[in-house]
Length: 520
Image (cartoon, rainbow, N blue to C red; front, side, top):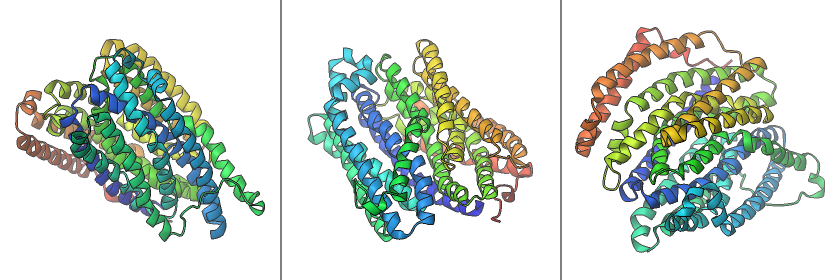
């Protein structure tokens, strides 16, 4: 099981890496042409709202409810029943998405007033946000169906196509900035159009892959008479599981929305600074955390469906080992190299040195919580695979209260940095409670060597931190130099830091065999 998990995670990780690199290129284009000004703030707010709903109806609550049920249907039903299940699922989900998208278009102005109340005092910023939102909201329909398609493909062991799909969003937005913006008077319309086009393209891209599996859904709203038993019940079960999972799997996004509301009251640029720092934090989280969570959920679901508790626990333990190995040094690297990273990637044209320093302060705050963010990603499937969405809801509710408390307490003192600190604290609380609950329920039994590996990783990370801190130098060294120098120096610093980390792990006795448990 674990070797398969490692292979699946590698496939998803490589494809996600390509996607995240294209995302960084997209953000570099944003930084150069939009900077951290009014238009950038308006677009990031407008895109965040449907993106939040996508996490709920797409890869968030829907996925964690859909994949375990679909895995069971796929394992125990004949192909015709599987296709009828998907037909009913896609038809009912599609209807909900259409109604939500129409509501978002009609009520765009009130939605912006509620979620970015600080913008109501600036008519230009408010209008730009509303215009963009009316184009980005229909993206919810397409990308949620994309997420359903990805769940189908992942369950069938086809991880690559689903993981590479986000590249088309990045390409579309880059094209919108470079080609649509110069052609249209309203830049907000250009960016919103890029998002909408991306949704259509991503869905079309996945259809041939579904066709190869013979699982292209033909949407239907009502079950035939002979299907009103088990198949109709299975579809209903997905939606019942979704209700608590809507909250439980979307806590991080709810926390982001809370921070967005508060950031709208801060100086112009605050939303953008949080966006750019979050994007860099999301890079290791997406490449590793999301990849591992994506790969682990179908396998855990199958283990649960087959009542294989040993395989279930082994998968979680392998995930724990890799999380320790990757997330701790990644968090340290982001904190120390915050200015070098942001300056190298974004400090050109419209993105000023001041924007770099403000974003770097937020990135350091986000880095504190990176390990917590990754642990949430790999521990939550331990509940979802067992079709238990209620427990993460309770834990998520508590972490959301923690985020709200610290956000309100810190944002007047530390401005946008306080919001990032609050998000990190909430992630650590969420991860800690998820892990404690899994252990208490007897689902997670931490195997020998995991704690020792954690100690070895911390020592190796400290050695790496000393080296990259010495090599990084002062902030001024990065803000006053040319791009070629920045790129070369950053690449050298990262390579040497990784080499020191790996060498120190080797000296401490860490061997590859500790990280992979052979299949039984």
